Each structure stands twice: as structure tokens, then as C-alpha cells.
Image 1 (cartoon, helix red, strand yellow):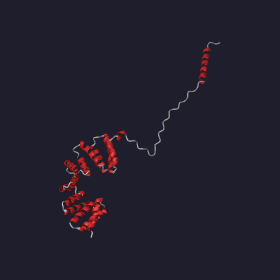
Image 2 (spheres, one colour):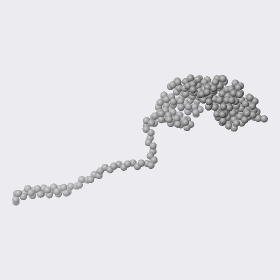
Image 3 (cartoon, helix red, strand yellow):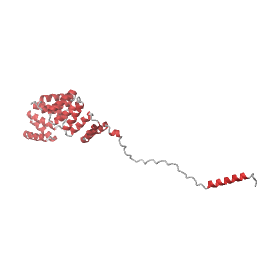
Image 4 (spheres, helix red, strand yellow):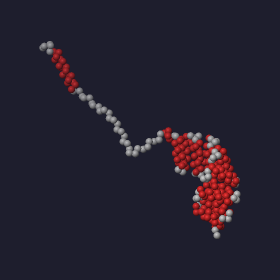
Length: 277
């Protein structure tokens, strides 16, 4: 054998062996690239996202909800919102004031007073708290307390025409008719559009036997509010005192047509029956 060909033969044999081994090996599996996640399908009318937690605990935002309820006349819902505000901020004077006003509107005058008490405790210079508390005391027939609160309100804010008006009403109730007239004078000097101030001033003049002034003031009240049934009734009484039966009959008929509280209706019908020929 030719020794020179031996290395070549060995190299060829090795190549053949490697080729055979490689041809029999299994192929590596093909791994697919990861697919992109599908985007979620959007609804035609997506729901509003929930309010952030910090907004749900914002006393100002909750107060606005309560104030809107108050403006719409939903006083119970307003109170519920104001309760939430005060649970978060028990020093919020404005919320005590409006919760008191909501209770007042519901006829719960004791609760209204309790809220005004809280506002005054936080700020003894809060004129509105005294004014509104005075109104609540009036509703409870505590006229002395009502007068005291309106005096405090006026000391803090002498431009509050309504405080003069309500103090004048309270003075009328305790029989101080001259002071009642003086307060209604002040109320009307500040705001000449308060029909009720003319009405109560007219009633005070009637109590002082000044029937001409009583008629003149009810004239003003009716001019501002032509549907003011009680003003027609009390003007009729003053006309009767002045001997003007025809004018009294006309006023009584108007008062009854417009609708009076039951107690005044009985009195109006009795006087009308007496005056008619």
C-alpha cells in the first residue's frame, strides 16, 4: 500500500462519518415570536370613570352637591350632604348655616337653632347666624329671643333690611307697635320692595287706631303683590273702621277669592255677612 495515500484516505473516512452523524440528528423546533396582545374592544358608550378617591373626600365638592339640592328644594338630601361635609370638616361655618337653613325649611326649628348655635360658637361675629337664628326663634314664638338675635345681627350688619323687618314683626307680637313701625320704616328705607314690611306696618298702625295709615300701607303691600290676600283682609278691616263699607266689602271679596288661612277665612266671611245689605 502506498503510504502517501493513507492520510488522504483517513481524512475522507472521517468526513464521511461526520456527515452521516449530522444527517441523522433531529431538527431544532422553530419557536414562533410572541404575538402582540389584542387591544380591548371599546364600547360605543363607555361608562364614566369613577371619581378619584380624593374628590369623594373633598368637602367643597360635597358642599356643592348639597347646595344644589337646597336650591332645588330637596332639603333632606341637602342635609345628608351637609352631614358628610361636617364629618370631614367640623369647623365649616358655612355648612352649619346652610344645614340650619335646610332644617328651617323643613319646619324643624329646634335643629335649625342648634346649627346656628354651632356657627356662632365658631364665629361670634357671624351676622347671618344671628339673623337666621332669630327667624327660627320667631317661629317657636320666642319673640324676646328673636328680638335679641336680630339686634345682634343688626349690630354686626346694619344694612340687613330683613333683620329690621323680622325684628319689627317680633315687636308687633309683643305689643310694642311704635317700635314695630320704626323697624319697618328702617327696613323699607333699605329695601322699599318688601311688601310684607308695608303689611306689618299697616297692621301696627291699625293697632294704634290710625286707620288711614293702615289703609295706605296695605295699598302699598297690594301694589307690590296683587295676590296678597291677607293685605286685602286687613285693609278691609281698616276701611270698615273708617265707615267705607263698600271698599271693605270689595276687599273682603278679593281676599276670599285669593284664599285665606282658615282662621282668617272665618273672620272674613263673618265681617262680609255683617257688611252686606
